[in-house]
Amino acid sequence: MRKSRRAFIRNTASLAALSASGLASGNADINHPTRLPSADLATFSKDAGMQLCEAYFSGMNEQKIALTKQLDVLGAVGGINPGMAGLNDVKPWEYQAVAAVKEAWEKVGLKLRVIEGPPALSEKTKLGLAGRDEEIANFITLMKNLAKVGIDTICYNWMPVIGWYRTQNDRSGRGGALVTAFDYEAAKNLPLTQYGEVSKETLWKNLTYFIKAVVPEAEKAGIKLAMHPDDPQVDSLRGIARIMNTVDSFKRLMELYPSPNNGITMCQGNFALMGQGIPGLINYFGKQGKIHFVHFRNVRGGTFSFEETFHDEGIIDMYQAMKAYYDIGFKGPIRPDHVPTMYGDSNQHPGYSTIGTLYALGYMRGLMEAVSKRKT
Image (tube, rainbow, N blue to C red; front, side, top):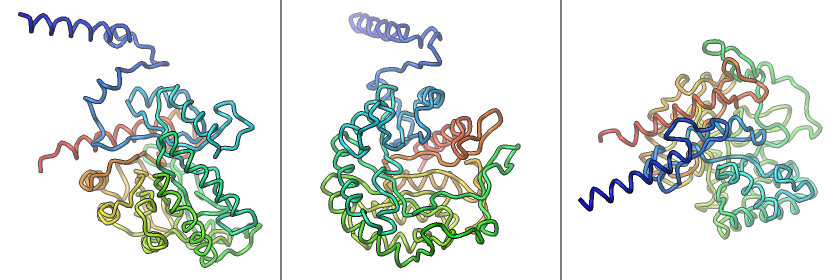
């Protein structure tokens, strides 16, 4: 009887908490979704031990934040923009800015897990221009301050001047969804940039200088540096060489300064377009502890002509990819990347449609549950 009474009281208290939050009655405000306490949510782990995240590169999109919270996807990936915290006169690598931005995300119920596109790394460092030592010093300051607030992963790239590049951002995909595409024939004769010809040797020299300066400091701060592949993977665009466009390049990167902190962003689409089998590559780098961050996406085509697809089509076996992450024990941040723009959504930010993102997140969570519950 006492046991039944205790159970009744406990269940009544739980129902009261649900009712207060609006969840039990179905009256929750969908614009300001509430959640169960984190202790209760921990009981219902959905992500196979990984940290499912979403990218916010266009600021705090209120709709996307609300929707991803309703999906219980609470990890955020983005930059350090002091303006979003009302600190327009503070440098983004300074502690005040880093702490304020992290707190701003926490106020809307999200945890900032990865800094993608660090604010203290630009052409000065990548091209070896005047002022690079100051820029590298700022990057080291950024790492130290990120460590102080509990953020341990930086996704960066070595694509100076021309970063992520597509020749078309509105190609018609499945059912008329808009996808991004690249055709080298449309880009190979574009004029040089203001920097003229920049060789692979120059970029490798500057990358070596950077790596040897920052990795020892990353080790001290506990920061994981996750190099993103070149996108696209051609050897040159407008005279600017591309060096992180082969698996051998990433092996060379690891050898520049062997360290557990010197790792990669496993951007599946890019590595697949290098002609690599993704599950095998995950196994190769994962067993070395080199995968610090994952961009989970799919593509079709090859290096010189490709288009991005929905997650459930394309050349990558996405189930086998997710299974590989699970089997190597990957516990880090993982996010969908470059989703199609679906009907009724804006193509203002190609690859980051809100509706397409929701589809991708649901698909990823389904794969996570499938691989974690499969019979061995």
